[in-house]
Image (cartoon, rainbow, N blue to C red; front, top):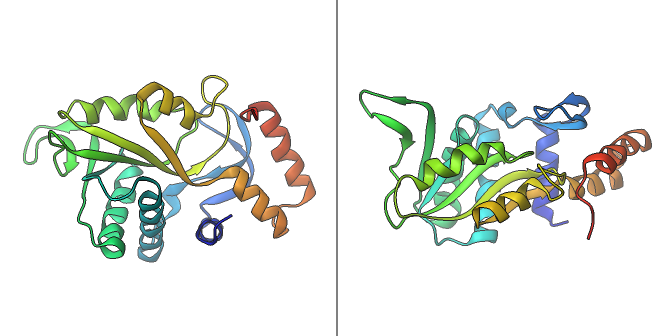
Length: 221
């Protein structure tokens, strides 16, 4: 695993964003691990988070895009932090855009925050994690309703490597359904291998993780 991915895993643990234990997900699944990007709360944490996203987007999609779209609510600070980091690291000015849960009817009226999305814009969607792909069902129609735009791809911080609604992973299902690429800064498979090697994950926890993936994991080809 690349050094920056190892650093990102350590950063998630230090920030207590990635935790191990017993958790019930929105999907109802009982999981031995949980990631909550809402726990990135300090200036230093958000600065580092934006830099990790910026590096991953740059490495995966290049610089030929105009707007970062972060779905409400957790995607809002992530998109802002990443926009700032992109300017700092790569000298490219990109615009951020997010949606409101409810449209505003006065002042800067409408459903969007930040930059408008215009005809011809190339958009990278940015999110914390996706398990079922449900958030994309709301997000993609909003982006595409703004005009003749191209969605370059989706970047999340963590690929949980588990099935979405069918037999494929949620990221693979999104790619198949909407026709754009999907990627993650790091995958849970990479995290487990790294933390087992560092002896952060013991045999008991590894056994519970293995059992979880036996039930919900994406089958290897």
